[in-house]
Image 1 (cartoon, one colour):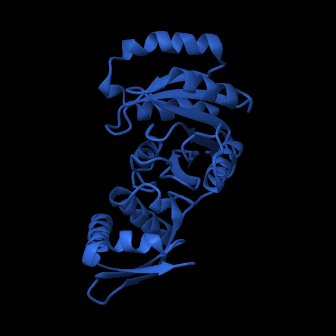
Image 2 (cartoon, one colour):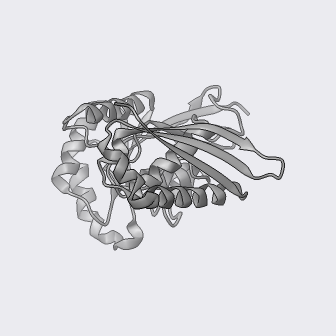
Image 3 (cartoon, one colour):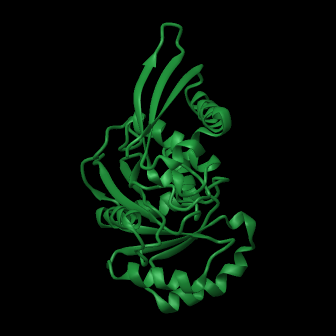
Length: 281
């Protein structure tokens, strides 16, 4: 049986459910999920092998690529387009329970310029009646060249098997780019750093997590099978330090304990997490 390949970019607004979908497809949490804007800042690749086909899913930053406001936005735009350029086709994910038609049209107009096949996926359809989408789908068919439409619920794993079955027809003969046991292009320390960033996004003001760098400096399995992890949080401005620490260190303690719980849930081991806050003036 000859090996086949298909590279798919997941594109859509923040909170459309791209990270939830890629985690569901892969079967493990490889991309962080948070309601705050652009939690995915790098193009993470999720690998899914189905028989002879290797699917590569590029989880891209939220697709507000029409407005470039600052250096961070430029970086996000670059990562978004890199994921699109690398892919063979585009899955455009829409939150079916809440979306803006005019924004959607402007996005699709831009994506059509790539000349790549576009499949529109309405996510969170467990929250609405599918018949409400019919006039919208009809309108989109009239305005744009869309390969196909799908309705799914990434959170509840509804419609994903059918979507993968459909994508299979676009795969082509090629060597696999990842081994059979790999599920992503990122290493373990990257995901531990992302888990901490996800936790900080939950507890801190929205501007702070985008102005820091997190590095997992140590990961060690102890003799009793406990896991010891050290992480550095480097902030760009001194004024953030007091906020992250909180009164008498309460905030950093809350962040550490919550992140420790998340890591324990993954590894099923006792976790000893140590955080160090650094300022890069």
